[in-house]
Length: 398
Image (tube, rainbow, N blue to C red; front, side, top):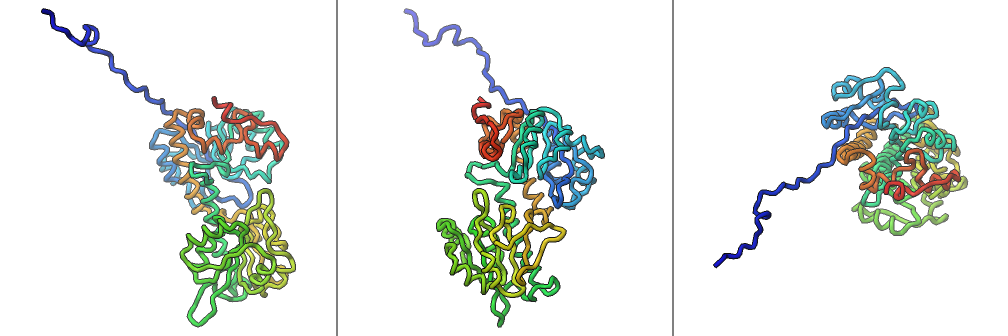
């Protein structure tokens, strides 16, 4: 009687093992040019970040002096594993170029065709010629101010907004001192002395961090915003009693008349709304301080005019106005660490995925930040702003 076996002879023979095919890691060749834009002192990668990237086998070229304004020396970058270049063009010749400010027309000439450019876009300051130059070189460009993560927030914009919000109160505190020709008041709360009063327009990230800093110093804070949900969220996260209101002219006028500091932190879709008219500013205290963080979008105060880091203030109707568009550059080292901490994981992930193309296919946040793909415009906002044709990046990456 034959015994039945459930296995055939072929199945009992040794079989080939199916191994998972690993993604081929890519080696990155990154250039870090020195920033030339007036007042720009930040750098995209700190020496610690360079060290982490070099440890993973990536090559980095740093233009001499790139980190000096953020207090990072060439020696620190060299010891971290980077090559220090004394040739202005060399950092631009790398496969990936990292910049804080967008490159100038001359700098785009240095960039090789098919290069990946990662920088801010600063849409309001650009011209059609800038995009024509990128298209001619078939550059793939990512704007870090457009990168949106899985939490639906803009990580680098949020981080820089946190710095701007905190800094706005610290700057106001400096300007209030008698040394800076202010009214000689201390921004805070001292026993037996009435606390300073701070008015903030905007309950977003800048407004939140301005409020946190002012409350931490002991000031009385009033926040105005036309979004009730933002005001509710702000009240929940501050864990302190705070006055909140929608932007109503009578309430705003009364608050400005009594305040020592006013912060502008509302960003409109195209232009920031005017929350304080010229007549309202006229009624403010002599020596009061306005810090208009929204000046890059036109400003929240009718009396605001753009100033620079070299000449940051002007006085109008006895009120000190600080209207510098790029406040985080004033704290270049903190801002550089913040930007670097966000960039480094992105760069390591690009290498892990086998290069930028593969990474962009799977990383939605990178696709959100991309506005040029091999010379093809892929961002609708940019296309609408300059009346240019564009293609959907999701269709190009299929």
